[in-house]
Image (cartoon, rainbow, N blue to C red; front, top):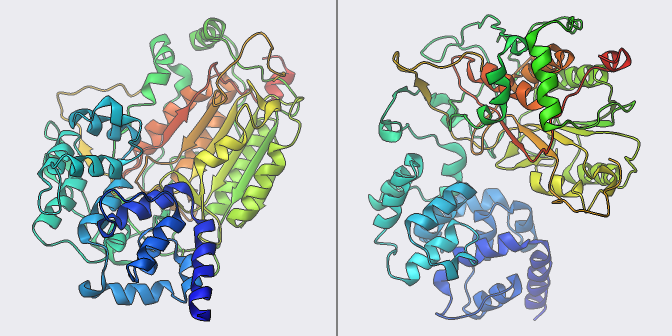
Length: 555
C-alpha cells in the first residue's frame, strides 16, 4: 500500500514538472495503448490510464522525451534505461511512434505548413495542428498512414526536399531502423542524398569520426587541426571585402539578402586544445571614422531618411549582457574552449559602441532566468537599446545552462516583449546566440561556372496607437535550425566575424542588418567546413549603431 502511495506521489510530482508540449509528446508516443476515443487531457490522466493497464511504460516515455532527471523520481537512471532499451523486447513504445516523434522535432514551422498544404488537411482541422505528430495522427484517422504504410510520408518528404528525413523513413520501412531512435538522432550522421539538390553539383564530406564521439546532446562543435584525409583543415587567409564600398542597389536589397542561406552544415568534432585554425578576422583597433565624401555615406543617409531609424544617441546606449557558459560540471558536455575569447571580444566591441557591459560566467538555467528577469524589471527609459549575447551549448531554438538544462530562446524573447518590459517598447532588442542548433551536417554545394553571384553581397508607447508586442527584435543565430556551429581555441566563427564587422562598418554608418549580411557572407565562405548564420528580426526601422566617439563628434 505504501509503495503504491509513494509511486503515486512520484508521478504527481513528475506531472507538475511537465510542460504542455511535453504532455502532447507523451500522449502521442503511448497513443497505441489508449482505447479509441479515450480523452487524455493531462499528464495525470495519462499516468492513471497506464497504471490501470498495469503498463510499466512511464520510465521509457520520460527517456524518449529526454527528461532524464525525472527518471530518478521513479528510481531509474538514464544509463539504466539505455541498457534496458538496447533489447528490442523491452521497448513498449513502437519504433513507428518513436520515429514519427523524432521526425517531428526536426521539422520547421514553414515545413509544417507546406506538409499540411500538400496533404490537403482541412481548414477545420488546421487549428488543432500544432506539430508534425498532429499531422500524422490526422492521417492515421483517415486511413492514409499506418505502421505498415508510410508511403504518404515518403512522398511528402520528397516534395519538401527533406531527404535526410526520407532516408530515416526508408530505413524503418526496410526494417533497418535502430532500437534507440533518440540516440540515433543525436549521435549518428547519415550520408547526404545526392538528389537533395538535383540542379547543382554537390560535394558532401562526412567525417566518420564525428559520428562516434558519443555526443550526449546537441552541442557546439570545436574545430581543430586534422592530420590526414579529406577533412584536413587548411589555413584560410583573411578575405575582407568592405561593405562600405557597396552600391545603392546592395543597400536597398540588404534585408532580402539575409534570407539567402543554405540549409546545411558539414561538421567535425575535435579535441579541446584546438588553436590552429585561422579566423576570418583582422586583429587590431577599430578603423577610424572615414571622411563623409563617399557615395555610400550619402546613400546610407538617404535610406535612413526614407525608412526611418531608431533613436540611438543615449549615453550609455543601454545594457549589453554577456552570458558565457564554458564549463558544464556534472554533465557529459564538453568544455567550450575559446568561448572566453568571444566574451572578451564582445566586451571590447560593445564598450566601443557605447553600451554598459554586464558579463556573467557559467550559469545554470535557473540563474540565467534570474539574471534576465532582473533586467526585465529594470527601467530602461533613459536607454535606447538592449543587447544580450549568449555563448553556450544548445539545441534547436534553445540554449543550455551549465547544468545541462534547456532554456528556450522564445522564452527569453518573451521576457522583453512590449507587454512584459514596457520601458523597452519601440526600442530595438538585440540578441546574439552562439550555440549549436542540432547535429545535422550541412552540405557543401559547388556553384556551377555558368552561375554568377555578387561578391558584395523608447519613450513610453503613445496612447493613440498600438503595436505588436513582438516588434523591434533582432535575434542573430550563429547557425540555422538543426545544424552545428563551429568554434576554435581562438573563438567561434560567428562571434569573431560579427565583432570584426561591427568594428569595421558601424563607424561607416551601415545599419545592423546590412552588417549581418556581410557576416553571413564571410562565415559562409569559410572552408572546408560550412556554416551559415541566420538573423531573425521584427525590426521596424533601420538600426544604426555609431561608436560612442562618433556620436560625440555628431558624425
